[in-house]
Image 1 (cartoon, helix red, strand yellow):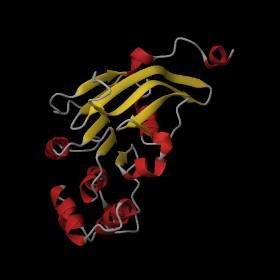
Image 2 (cartoon, one colour):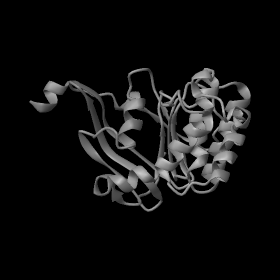
Image 3 (cartoon, rainbow, N blue to C red):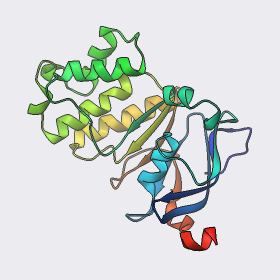
Image 4 (cartoon, one colour):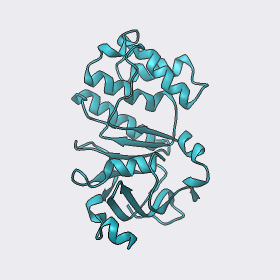
Length: 223
């Protein structure tokens, strides 16, 4: 997806990522406008998860910059954490808490002012209301994933970073995820995601990470 600096709300320029002694990608650049979506594509090991973690502020790039509305993320990492939802491979649920308690815990970490009505609406949207009082340890894999996805609705954030969000979901839940993404974008939100499922996300850009595979080894980079 190519946008001018003026159009892009979220952008990365000339990113290089290293994990341990391995260069994962280098020279990676993209730009996404408000209301935009970007698919991260490429084979296993090409750096999709690493890039999402980097964009979430959980990893630090070796080189390059990431900006929001023209401001580097490094200038205020706390503000960036407050503007995003990151959903990784792990559902990160507390098994001893109920479905509702889990969602309330995560939502109020993001926004202490989240009220009961917002929690109830998020549970209903993911068909979890009948399970609200059930301990999370009793949930199926699909139910756990839906509970993780309900965080996107329980506390608002303009940037969604989703790593394989459809894993474990049935057809109806995948359709609901597509509706959630569409509504988020309609409100000006941005979605960046990796997936092996053919999610319907109209007009989404595509970033092929294997095109940014390093041409040199880490040792050569530092030589």
